[in-house]
Structure formats: structure tokens, C-alpha cells
Length: 195
Image (tube, rainbow, N blue to C red; front, side):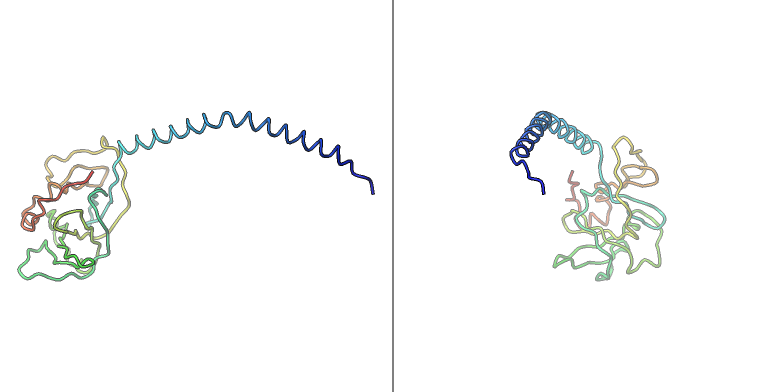
């Protein structure tokens, strides 16, 4: 067995550590600038996206696709039976107990003037609005999220309940919808979109 020259080995180790430290110190001096530039690029991109894009939830009503801004929604839940109210208009399906709060459940298809859908009882989803008093809209199905820039919105001036169209999706205007006679009767006039 050959003898190990510990002094030479230690010297080589120290030389390698020195070279490695020198190399790292040259690289490290560029890191703060690199990290700062990258952070600024990410911040600029996020601000640009936040300013120019809005996020909407797409829902299905019969064969039509509608979307509501996420800022207008409080919660989404599967539709279960709600308590029927005698002499209520057809658009008012009834009231729903959501964790001790009574919520008026409205049929969005009826509010928009779509024809009746005979098999929808007990099916679909509820979109709980950020409104006072509490209101939920019943829809047939929930779709994907829709992100778009404002300039992509094609206005629909003759459709009072719509902000406009993005592709084949109709963007709902809940502020205008809150002036519908049924919603006025349950005092939804205090609804305000939160942006």
C-alpha cells in the first residue's frame, strides 16, 4: 500500500476551493442584476395582463353559451331542490337555504327570454351572485374560464342584458339584468359589480 501525501492532497484541495470560490464570486456579482431584471419583467407582464384581461365563467343555457365576470360571482354549487313559492312568477324557482341564508333562485333562461326547457327541474348549477339580497341564477351547465382583452368584446347595443360577444360566448351585463321587473321586485337594485 502506497503512502498518501496528505500535504499535497490538502494543497490541491485548497487550490480547487480557491478556484471554485473565484469562479462563483465572478458569477454571483451578476446575479442581483439578473434577478432584478427578471423580477421587473414578471411584474410588468402581470400588470399588463391584469389591466387588459378580465376573467369570466362560461355557462350553458340550452344551446347558448353565456359568461359572467368572476368578480360578480360569490360561489357555484350543484342545483338541488329549492322551496317552491306559491304564486311566484315562473322565473323565480323558489328559495334556497345556503348555510342559514335564504337565497332567491332565479331561472336565468327565463330572465333572458329563452323558451322553457321541460327537463331542467332538479338539474344544473347555481351561480350565487355578490348581491343584496342574496340571489342565485340557475344554469344548465358550467363551462371553462374565458380570459379576453376588452378590445375583443363586440358590443351588442340592441341586447340590453349583454355587454357583447367574444366568439360564440355572450357576455352578460348583470347591471342591466338587475333592472328586470322580477329583480326589481326582490330589491336587487342594490347590486353593484365589484371590479
